[in-house]
Amino acid sequence: MATRSALEQSRSALHLRLLAAQRRLVAKQQSAVIVIGGSDRLAASSLANQLTEWFDSRTVRICAPTVQASPKHPFLWPYWQDMPAKGRLTIVVGDWLTRTAIQAGHDELSGDALRMRLKSLRTFEELLAADGTSVVKIWIDSSEKLLRKRLREAEDTDAEGWVVDADDLLLAKKRGHTLARELRSQGSGKNLPWKVISGGGETKHRDLLAGLAITAQLNQAARRRPATKAKKPSGRPRGLLESASPHPTLDKKGYSQQMVKLQTRLGRLSRLAAAKGLSTMVVLEGPDAAGKGGAIRRLCGLLDAAHYQVFPTPAPTPEEKARHYLWRFWNKVPAPGHLAVFDRSWFGRVMVERVEGFAKDAEWARAYAEINDFEARLAETGMVVLKLWINLSKEEQLRRFHAREQSPHKRHKMTKEDYRNRKKWDANLRAAEDMIARTDTPHAPWVVVSGDDKRYARVATLKAVCRALADRLD
Image 1 (tube, rainbow, N blue to C red):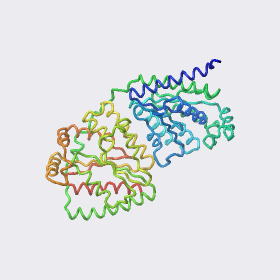
Image 2: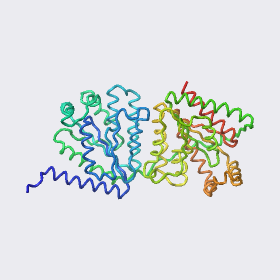
Image 3: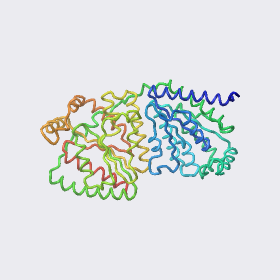
Image 4: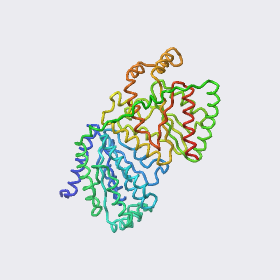
């Protein structure tokens, strides 16, 4: 019986090496993203198919958004949906860099918008790597002549059956081909270069070279330790929240009159926003018993139930813990025309996780920049992003705790955790001041609301949301 060719023996050995690398990922509960880019989209798809055969399919999934995917969602939204949990691997075809090159080639992206996109891609890759995800990037580089030849062959339905579209034709032309190469270095995160593989030659040999590069990068990434040091906030603006200490009050009659007007106005504004496809994200943060729930109920009092959703943010589930902390919030980005209200939010990373030690110093220290980037990606689609901190004095919090304990309708809200958290009042205050100072941006501003008087706080909350929507609609 004839022995197998050297190529087949090498591919068989590679198969075993890839399975071993995958088993290490699972055993160490690490995640990996394999990105396949380049102007040869046929070769990228072929390689992805081959990788799914080589890997154990139980812990692998494919992410393959198109340029037209989710046009009204943030650009990175489809990729966040498929980011792998610990012990899993995602293969990305239709990668973020090639999609960007296609948009730029069609003159849909240029100038400052293109520079901002490339910066967001670098930040995204670095964010994944900093969180311990192995980012492996393979760029299949085929010559223009070879690309045009392959596209002609692919159009023959008796051959590969590939439907050649305008994006393929663009990448096969000199301008698109050159543009993709130029953007390749500009859109790469620090220490996360593309491994370039020639697209020429026989398919099995090309896949072998790509597979060997993937194995080497997976093994190298598995040995790399995430950064354990990060610059902590310094120079905190002292008294930021104490400066909001005046506690205005509102009588019952004035409250009722304003509430009717504001709820009616917000209902009208929300319907105009829905008609125009304007999405809104409202975040409410504050100490325990600050009145966030009551403010949210008044906020949604006259809204169309089809146009909004309230998301309470409890402790993360095991599925959420297995991914980057922002993953569960990317999954809740509202559809065009919808309003999402968050009762606590992604700021838990720099609040409770910081104070309680659930996040390492390096993790929460870098989270300010990650959060600012997340909110910038939302805002660049035109979305309204508004954050409200309902401020509460320590004395008023204690009074409300006692009142809750006496009320049969509110007693269930009180736990031992509330009093335990109260003992960390100063640490929580410092964290809140750092958070507001470092994440207050023009595109996602903070509004500090005095909360000692619940009526005043509810009216102020509705006013802030109405103002933000009206400004954007105007």
